[in-house]
Image 1 (tube, rainbow, N blue to C red):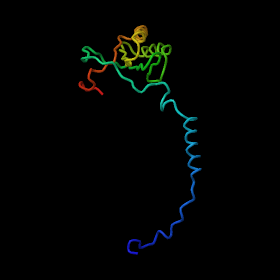
Image 2 (cartoon, rainbow, N blue to C red; image 1 turned 180 degrees about the horizontal axis):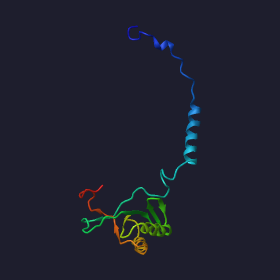
Image 3 (tube, rainbow, N blue to C red; image 1 turned 45 degrees about the vertical axis):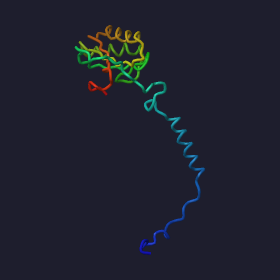
Image 4 (cartoon, rainbow, N blue to C red; image 1 turned 90 degrees about the vertical axis):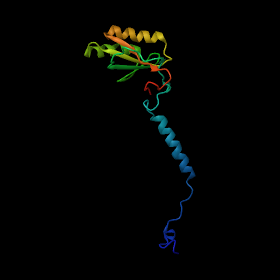
Amino acid sequence: MITHPLDLASRLRPPPRSFDGLFLVNGALLVLFFLLFGSRFVLAPGLGVSFALPEVPAPLVGSARAPVVISVPRSDVVLVDDGMISYQQLRAWLQKRVGQEKGLVLLVRADRRVPSEDLGVVAHMAMEAGFAGVQWAVEPAGGGEAGGR
């Protein structure tokens, strides 16, 4: 009696009956809601998560500050501040961006699996739009020796 001075165990309600069927219904409803109301911002289908920049043996000398940055994770997909766009939409986006300022430099963060032809197309569009230059983002060889990620 010393260990249970208030005898609280006798005042508790009895445990409820088994609700195993209710738990299965709740689980099925959760799966249904995730399938119906899934967001493309959580995990976009087909968009890889293994985005890796190409590597160079030493940092590039003569790099300039680039206020405009785009990412190219795969062919015909470009990630800009406004979201995901295609190459057709990129041309208009670049022209709109250059219209605001002059002498801009474009920094392109392209995955190493993006073909060189696509990089040339992006550079050509940027130069036609009026960018002063195009730079390619790279990582130093070896990963983190030069203060990388």
